[in-house]
Length: 169
Image (cartoon, rainbow, N blue to C red; front, side):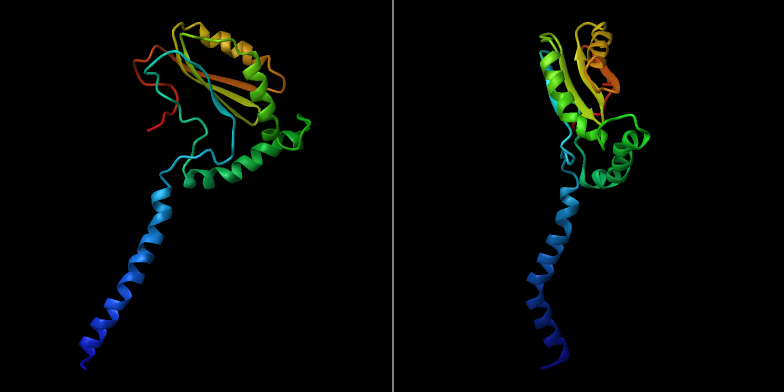
């Protein structure tokens, strides 16, 4: 048997193993495009009355974005405790209670489509409103929720144009 024919047979036997290796190595790269709420940040709709409103991306991240965000989240989460400005050791520990309080306080907005994200005592409102004055109303309401540190209202009037927030692909 010549070295060439032995090598050809060896390659043929290795083909399934090589194929599986390539498939397994490419799986994480393919999954990196998947968006997931890695940190379980509260993210929910409070109104869904405006069809065609672009849905916000909220706290959904790729795995690469999550890894890049992990360290800064740890720093931001503990900074209020270290500064003595919050009673829990991590600002993210307030988020579930804030989200529950928002759900209880926000009245129905049948003509709007609005989503809430809560992260480290900050509240984001993204979506579409029928009346531009809704932004100031929402900001005042959400600032009155206990333990909320900051409110960011990113809404657009109607559904035409580019939203002032990141959207789902």
